[in-house]
Image 1 (cartoon, each protein chain N blue to C red):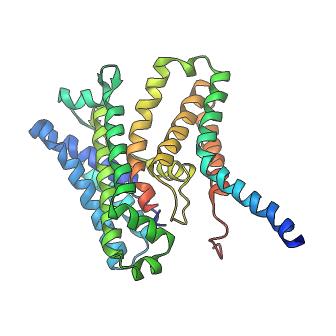
Image 2: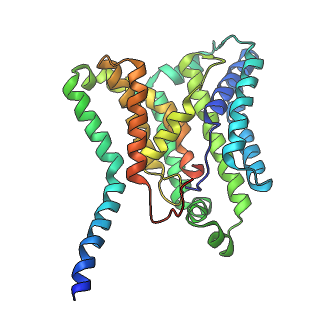
Image 3: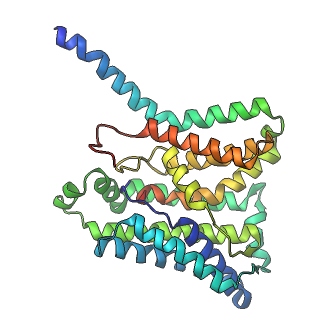
Length: 254
Length: 70
């Protein structure tokens, strides 16, 4: 909604997964918050470079995408770090009263994101900045602070996704999260958040994520090759943008 | 009078397009589900539903805060 692009999601998710697995070797489950902290720190770092140094978010996050993969390879030395903690593995593969634990974690994360978006000053400020930064600034919103906070929050969620991914895989893999950024952007756009900002929300994004997942799942069941799946996913993404784009708001397309 | 009658259909089509944009994700989700349910019996099984939810969880969490920054 802030009209920024974040290409670093896959790297931050993967790096958080690797950091959690690394620290869990000696500290057990108590190391789990390390994934959240590393995600939030990287998000805040991106936010500071983007907001204070005026570097386009596309460039900063592209840099982190590449650097993050390097850091993952350094920490893992190219080999997966296995997670032996049973509680951690239960998060990824267990259930509570028949509902997968991982789904409950996602629902709690959704509830928090919904409240932040609709019932906090940060959420309303994000919508205002996406709608028009100059107007938002003149109405008293501290633009830089909101941008940094937004990227830190996005990083925190990436950190949580990293913990969940590590628990699901039972390891911190050097290739964890690879290519996730494209699925995330597709989910956000298909969910109705235009890249021009000012609109959209978490409910649409959940729907977008479900569409992307169901597409992959259904195409797998139908025996469609992975190559053809990429073509179909790409076509769905472009059609979603064609329908969701607000042409009145855009003057010149470059 | 003629101006009013000329502008009303375009205004109405604009509103319809806005509504289409709002409900587009839901429509796609329903269409995709119906489509795969027709083509594959396995798709509507409880086991596959659980698999989809597990797979969607990581992507959902990673994407959730992105409407803010995308």
